[in-house]
Image (tube, rainbow, N blue to C red; front, top):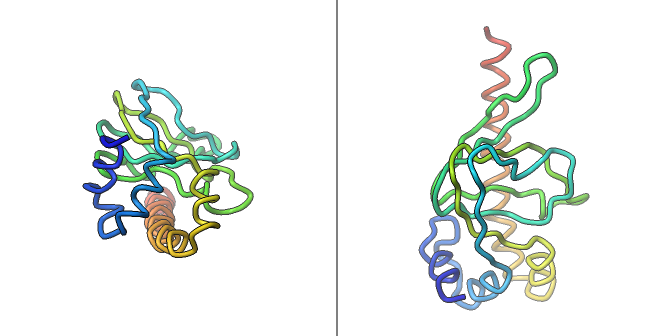
Length: 151
């Protein structure tokens, strides 16, 4: 548990959070590994986690009819994958695939929601951070759409 908490403390995404909140997050955390090519998220499936990437690369993709998957963003060490655990109905909005061997910390969405309900200050901190993440992902998707239709 100490290693997970240490990585959370050192991450840019969670920088500045109170120690007690980081301890609560660590209680929802586990180490995960994805092999190159492995699908991590599938659009429309139940979203019940987010991932803090420790090592590797993950392609965030949308599926376009007649074109197949389009990478809208590639995430790497220190970045967070997944915000849909926070917003009902808790379904993924994108696909994600490991580009190479990827190690990450998985944070259980149900656990995060429960701890946020019990501690509104934690919930507000997470909402602020994940709202910014949502904006970044939606901007990346918009940028890719402009590039696709600008051809």
